[in-house]
Image 1 (cartoon, rainbow, N blue to C red):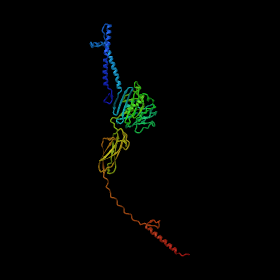
Image 2: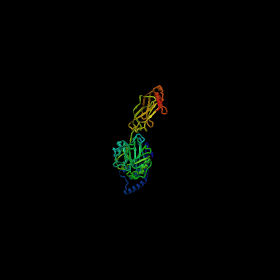
Image 3: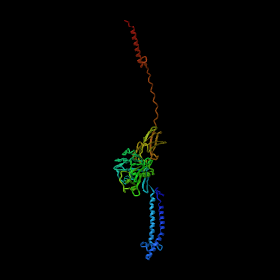
Image 4: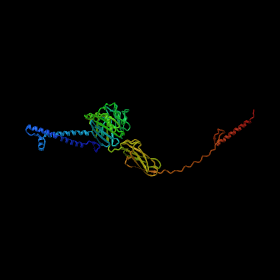
Amino acid sequence: MLASSSGETAAPFSSVCTWTRDHAAAVYRSFPRADVVASSRHRLKSSRQRKEPARAPGSAARFLRRSGPRAEPAYMYDTRWRAGAWAVMMAMTAVPSAASAVDRWTSPHPGIRHLHRVRPGVDLHVVLVDLASPEVSVVATRPEDRFTTTSEFARRYDAVVAVNANFWGRGSCGLAAGGGEVYPRIYEDGCIATLGVGPGNDAVALDTSASPHGPLPAMITEAWSGKPWLMRGGQAPRNWVRPQHLYRPNPRTAAALSADHRTMILLSADGRRPGVPGLTGFQLVDVLREFGAHDAINLDGGGSTTLVMDSHLINRPSDRHERSVITHLGIRLRPGAVWYAGQITGRGAPESVTAGQSSKVWVEARNTGRRAWSAEQGPTVELTDGGRTWTARPTGEVPPGEVGRFEVSWEPRSFGNTSLRARLVTPEGGLLVDEPIRFDVAVRAPAAPTAPAAAPPPAPQVMTASMGFGCNAQPGHPSGLAWGVLGMFGSLVAALRRRRRPTA
């Protein structure tokens, strides 16, 4: 076996050809002596009967004349030629079987690897898609474009890889969505195994038995469903009740995710033709497990199974032509795309601030990357003043193509003209924007402290006196005391007068 520079495993064709040539020559050389004996006897017998030497007619006679006295009769040459041709034919028929047992790997695009496997009874294709690559995006058929061939879908959506997806009748079997729009006329019929992908290639595998008509989970815009789960959480059920065709070989289409959901696995297996019956469900699981599948769903197969790559039909549909199917799964390329990128659209800071007081500096940037920005995950603005740094994240969700705002609270310590420097940093630590961001701010010194105000003069002391005697005495003004004394004196005089009155 030889490994090619492209990574594919190639058959040892030079060795096969060498073996074929040597073997054919050996077989060719092994025949003449027996032929010579038989031919000589035949020639002698013919000569005695005809009383004349045997002559080869036509071109064989010319060959004998050109070959000189050592040339052999034409029928001897013909017999030897047939023996050699038979040996070459038998040897060459063995070459395809040697090459057919070889897996051929190619890397047609960044983030995409393709395997073509041809073995006795098997003809299948596997496509591995690196969802961690920002140059790769996954797309589904939008509802208005349903019921088209896979080739037409690939042309409309600029997909370099495309396969058929959901089972279908008058509508889609199970949840289907494209561009964030859920399909109308969905029927369940067991199609509850769903794969979904968002704009940032965030992939999920979920059971939609409770919500076959939607809504879509958050951050998911593309969805496909099938039946049954071929693998769930790394385990294969292998006790399928339906569909029964899983127990018979058929053309197959399947989609799967790796354990970390960073790799999508697409499989297309031919069938229903002489020598290539297709795959059973068990064989399908074995192939998917070989390539690291963790969650896998069985999609529409049979005559619907179609794989298109770079505008070419790669597999051989059992109907001998493409069917129009309800939905598709495609892989598009975005050359040079990155997850996080931005473009400064605005900035601002106060013209002057007071040292020791907090103030805000803001930056606005457009999201030109593949992933959305948020306060929980996304780029960060770093503001530097001398040896101190302040950071802030976007004030809200910023989808790709939208403008986000970063506000940084800053507290200067020294006064004078201050030059602030800011930069936008990706979560990985790289620069989001190469453009330098600078703010020139005048910092005022804080106002001089003022002397404390003089204390107010003490209030005049007010004499208080009791307005009466005993426990019920109340404080009062001194004038009240005079009136009280006079009142008591008047009461005493009245009592003395009553005592002096003569009795009757």
